[in-house]
Length: 341
Image 1: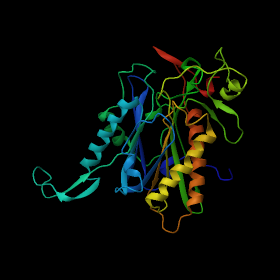
Image 2 (image 1 turned 135 degrees about the vertical axis):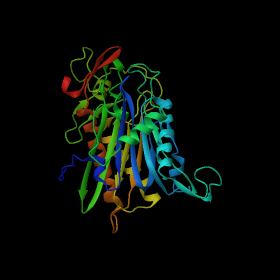
Image 3 (image 1 turned 30 degrees about the vertical axis):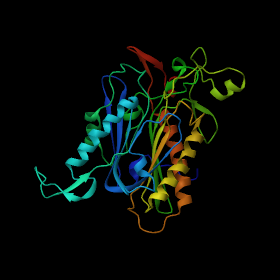
Image 4 (image 1 turned 60 degrees about the vertical axis):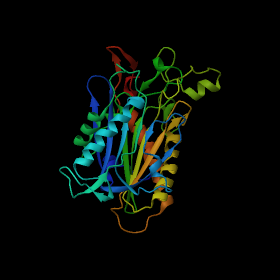
């Protein structure tokens, strides 16, 4: 691309903060994207094994216009519990959809009732360490406490702590995934992305078409190239439903409608298709959220923003594996990182 993505990542979009919680007891965690001033939100679900919460509210047909947080979590469906902690954190600070009613009793008597809306999505990492340890409400709350507008940490953190990629030929031949983030400013509009990379398929560098991380050869020492192997007649191992998933958040500072941010989320899915092969499989629950903070004045070109969102999401996926560190030992599967091969 002609413009180099910034190292600041998703927080380059004004109005957003990112926080990670990483569980020290095993590699898992959650990542929260906070929009204290509110953001118009949309979503696009392409994987066949999604685990989500509050995504239906993001349809342009439904009533809620803005959200104050998005949660990405490990722990499979158990990890959706972490959204409760994000809700509590937002509620304590008065963020949420304001209802017409007021509280009649308790410490908030006479105050407007607000209900925080926290769309969330999860990925499967239960085969990395003790599966009884997974993100909960306390983890979601801690991620909010850690959130800031600083450049988000990448690699083995948050929802990417237990992530892996290249599982088509079994977890024993997979590699370490992680969290990645990127952003770019073009024509005064900033577009950013964050990805928790836990794909069934290989991660591809869109600039070269080369496999960067993914299934390894039988001896574990080199990259196999999953699709090349399949085309040569080597069939992949049977996989459990829901055993992968890449989660993404794309955002812009432009002013967009709810229908427009849903279109941005749809276009951004092309970034996953460029950087992961195969993507959107039966065992992936690929979900992309889109946010528009509206901090920038002026007319927005929807096609430009959607194209940039796809580019930044592909870059975020690539950074997710390039910044990851390998795992091994202590009952963990052998998951080398890119730098280990």
